[in-house]
Length: 490
Ligand code: N01
Image 1 (tube, helix red, strand yellow):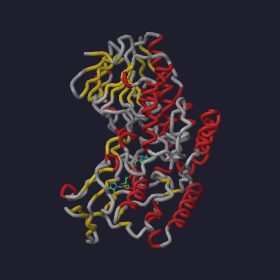
Image 2 (cartoon, rainbow, N blue to C red):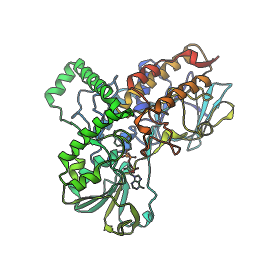
Image 3 (cartoon, helix red, strand yellow):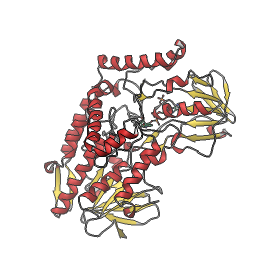
């Protein structure tokens, strides 16, 4: 058995995406060097390492979708492409010397709490074990591609891949291509494929509300200005953040008047992009604005105006060796199928077997839905901190606002444990229950519960993904480590 970094107070960070890297930097800044990052892939970056499909970009402006303690004045445009975000993450990883803390190609497959020692034993896929006093789980919520279960899919003899596993060796130029799915990934990839392919069929099950993107390229002069006057960069971030909070209720509240405002804007955008009223009708959602994720694009709807792009709304019956057949009996031959069907929701269950106090398993505790205090701590699983855990996703702003609050909370708890020589901190069950009852009461007033089907909801219709409120409110609640909410054991 070896230790997760130095022997005095080993800390394990699982996952080297935004959350893991951010946690590591803040630990370094606090003078805490005794951490190891376990990363199952061979590089850092998480989402931004994996999602390299043409058109991949963040749909939150980069001045806000970056760490507040590592701001960059060099973003090339308002919504930076995926590759640039990955470059940013590689840059801060190297700047803070995080590679020497990282065990790449190391997947954690099991975790067990040792109560007398107040430590966790982590086991890797290679059957190595590590001991850590604190575990910060940064495994992400939307990581593993969700492949659709479509009859005959295995029999397709052309090229088939998921957006998050893009095959860059395959040239789409001049090919007949199908895209299945019309969510956040599809709206980014469809315009790019439409430009390349000879023919593109987009298989839509549910249309989405799309709003204008207002993207823009940042001039060299502007970037120099931001570099020279960091206050300007902060001001830009501040503006983006508060504007998203101001307009947030249109996207997350179940309020007919606010939803109508959003719908009106989106309908106007559709009208400006698509001339044919029949096509417009097919592209118009019949669920309340915000119920499924609002999408932003200036090119997606316009793609359907191209002569080489067809919107297919008949449900898929079967995939055959040479193409796709829909329920109405039409068969469309294709060379390639791009699956844009999203991700298996990682935060709905334990990422691997996790055994807490008294031998209880996290998956058993979560059998009726994933719950955690402030999305981070689960009673009975001491010294285990989840970043981007249950009910911490935003529908309207940068997820990093939530992540940074969670990092601050985790750091405060680590300091408490270290400085006071505590064995463990464990959130009180009654505190956790009250918190979650409050969340679920508020959930009833959120637009996500108005009847549409989305990855936000579990099979029983409950929502254990998103935070029902403003980001500022969550951050204020989550940042502090309130000692009275925890059992402190020496
Ligand atoms: O996945 P989705 P995504 N047959 O689940 C359809 C983040 N993200 O990868 O709506 C036919 O949204 C499904 O149809 P329906 C972001 O949080 C962020 O696009 O279920 N179709 C839907 O149209 C986002 O919310 C960025 O009826 C099938 C689509 O596939 C999350 O990732 C960019 C099907 C899946 O849409 C997921 O987005 C990209 C089937 N069997 C993603 N199964 C940023 O810019 C599913 N579909 C930050």
